[in-house]
Image (tube, rainbow, N blue to C red; front, side, top):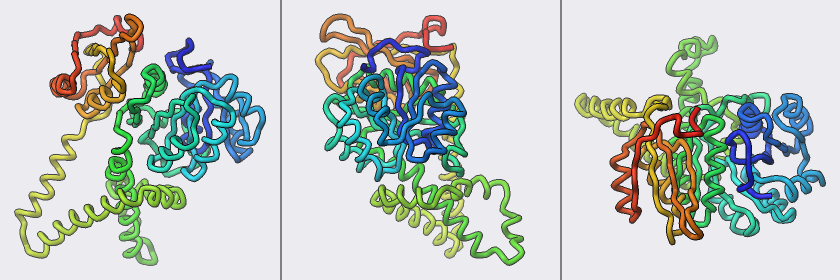
Length: 390
């Protein structure tokens, strides 16, 4: 069974296996069931109480241990999509399991670093698998299924890393699944992923941990300082409550990019200190102004106007990797892709159709696509014309 079969509820897949039912995996199962009760979900975990809890919540249809023969049958006979939601050190064993079962569908993951999993995929996954790396930018200070919730992914950015070998229809279906749980897809080249998330996720976590250490160093026995730590301080340091073991693993999996980011952060803080020590108010104000301007330029919460949709049509003739290249260009221009469709006009002749919301720089998108050698047409699209928009 493959991903191109007919599916329900616009989730892209009818039968999904989620390996790892911690915070992210269990939340994904819950989100998928909430979006489409008929989707069949198998959950895999080494912890029996977790499997029981996931079944009792109605988030999975069947729970398996990794050694269960029923899991092997599900993977070989029914499953269309496997989502790996485990610590990075467990990836190799599960990829070997997929190879042993002869799995022939789509594989994605939610792991926050990609260096090892890309090597493992090349080494272990059979050609019948289409591996599309992924990473939802979501989390919580709580861990495990106890912290899971079905609305965890609403409005968040979900990174996908397609490449030239990605089957366009498989990317389309994975995009449908992610947008079906109200997340938004951002495409990144695989080689850029780890450095990008170091800046926006891994370094901030270490900064939050450092702030908590600073406050703790100055807290007296009565903890009066900690009682003052409200508002902005609590918001800034919330992520420091995350699992130390988990974040130690993430840090060392992305050690080079994280070390570079921390060194750059040291330099930035040093500029503040130098301006303060030298009494340079102008420099200090300029540094604050730079940060203020950058923060104000961040996009607001994702609330696109559903009556202002734009269709972009791009011929895919005789060119590999169109989906990967085009979606990456769109993400770089800040354009949000509401849906993807592939119109097969004739054998070897297809058109990629993207429906965009009213975000980003469409002018830049147009210029960048033309500069990349694409023939592009844009046309306004009414909501009623677009079946994927509620």
